Image: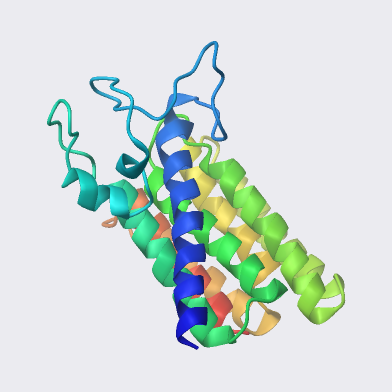
Length: 236
């Protein structure tokens, strides 16, 4: 049991590390896997460009080895990367304790949760590709529900309902920013991921958040993502 818990945490750290890499590279239009030896560089400090030693970019442990700052130029390292890694590790651990095994259900939910975590950190960033991340999360949701329910009819019906509601909203909003599109894309995620019994209540939550003018769009989006993933887990 202890070894399984440790393994789940390690899996989460690895997922979180890849997510933190995407968090750094996507807004800068840098490929998220590997690097081109002709145009790119090995892991390095983004300020002084000094090449890092392997222990200086290890997931989570790098924060300890660097004490939160570059060992060469002394510039503080943004803690959001470590926070994302730790949050994803805790998610992986919680999912294992909830599901009890490293099966397909576990992997799909962890992938979806990692992507949603990443979208929270990327929201309101230029060239963040949040829409693509949400689309990928929806694709994983289709696979997950087909696997667990052995039919595509349920999530296709839910997606259709969410689509018609989304169309009715966009017809009234002539101009939308990219962030608003990302917020409305949560309707698609809800349609794919949520069962019919909680789909409509969740859409009501999203509409209520959209109508709450006192909340910033970023805050609404974060609340929507957190509520979505919580409802997915509760509906298992």
